[in-house]
Length: 485
Image (tube, rainbow, N blue to C red; front, top):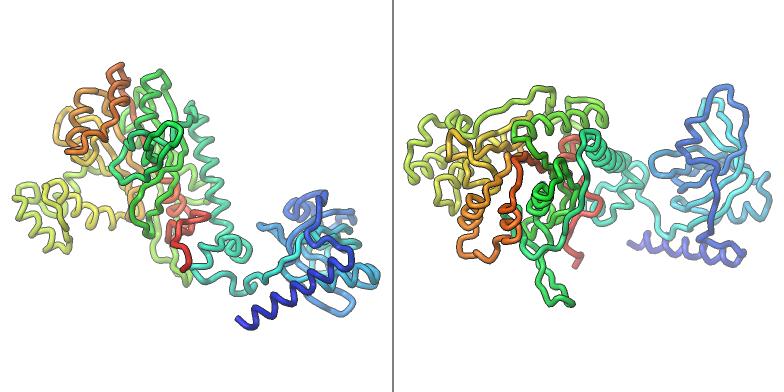
């Protein structure tokens, strides 16, 4: 800490000296001729010298007496600068010696290739754009402390190219989803993030209060019930990329604020939506990541598992997967199921209902162990109150749950459009909390909603899958953390 304090003092002294020289240490507008990336793309072996104006952060400095070589970066790319203090003159040389790694500068000069073929700029003039008062992380070590990576993401982005790549890929994934759906006739819509009733999923909401209306509101846990209102209103193919909020635990796979895609297609069913998801995810993998074979690696760079997204993806019924573990499972009593689950290494906690016990078995022995894509279909109706009942077996609903890399990536339904059955399902789910039922949604259903298929995809988990990130915090720019004490 003493060493850091000394460095901070020195930088403040340099700041003061710049001001004494009449230099604005936090400069004004600087017009550039192109970006660093754009400039690098123009270099050819026989390229003539071109006058350029570029700007960036100083990330390296090699002092060779009168000659100096610097690297400046604009995030994703860097370029080498060459300065000769004899050419700059005494005034600029004095200012130059007050610069540090991390400072932003704008330079004017001409482009050239060094003898080793390195794209460079011979600097004739420079302008101070922003003085950095704190040192950047060491170049070769970067930001390795996990706490710092998440609390000070800006340092992570400056020092760790791999982190920057993940977030650039996330941006491309979101843009790719929009383009994919819009090309297929889906319209992007927006629905309320503050709702009178938190519906569309079973989760603990965040609560707020609207002063002017004197009304308690909830941050949405899902947009589903509003999107279905739009199906009632005549929209046939819609989607929303939205922020959802759930006041629940934080883990490697959960953040209280997260991004979801939900899409609905009038006239489709869960099988059509499964085809859509399979096409979408493989399209993103091929066009953005460049492969359908995704390696997930540990901190040491060793591959821990490989995910094969090659089509077609496996589809299996929920019941068949369970009987694949225990052929007599569904013939057992509740007590026998609890005992058998423990024999298989699965603790069922406080579960008392048969479907809850079975779901514990599914999550531990099937979901968590499924690495390659698996569509789990025909799920028990108690687990999915908003899906259409199967006509051949009324104990299950026409649903898929897409599992990849040991976690659910996407659910998809044949949407329930019978308002009487929907009311009964929601009342059963609500129990004594009958006031939590969205009566306005049920009113909309009574006006008639066409048969439809719907999907949800967690964008954070999808990004983890495609980029190989091991924690949801690695794909969210500013994840939620406890304040420092």
